[in-house]
Image (cartoon, rainbow, N blue to C red; front, side, top):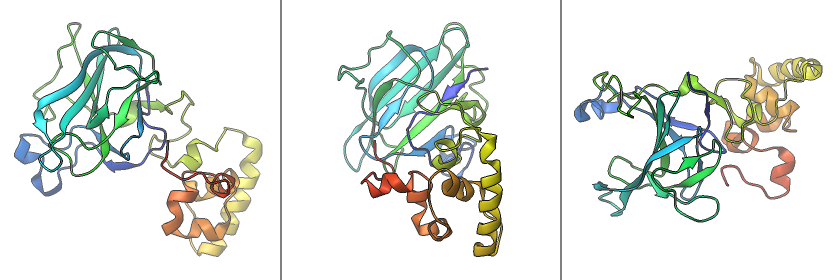
Length: 251
């Protein structure tokens, strides 16, 4: 089994694997969505989810966005020994950290920038990153292509690290307040319990994990985490970060 890093710095799932809203994917001959769509603004850095060999990087001339005229820009990376490949779709470019373009046949290291996100290609209604995972044979051919998802499998259970290699403490799509601030320090367990009790009284219901972590590790107060309209702040950045001008969902 392959262990994947998350391909973006900030993680919010727009569309999970397997869903079939309004029979959209059924009309394409699929059982459902054959990847995970992550929220990503134009220009967001996309990171390699694992090390491996680049098997495709560039424009797909047969996949053009009719609204903006942008042809799809895609990347595929193969892990030659674990026999998986990852797919990154709707990109703006295939630019690496040094500004040069990713090349087919090149070996990349997990967590390195491989491009920037956008809204290229026909099968997209807004900027995001479509991330896919497939099992392959030794020649790079997709296995189980007739599984209803053109060989794609749900990547969710394979994500074990953040983009920078930090080990995830909870499920991959838990808010950043949990992933960034939590450090498995059980000395803070008492604080978490105290905050949970205080929040329960204030909210008049049990708080969720991300609200507790945002208070204990993100420095947010109970009024902030009670306001779901402010979630993009308290779930993704620390209070002190906001006060210094940092905004959520920016590279």
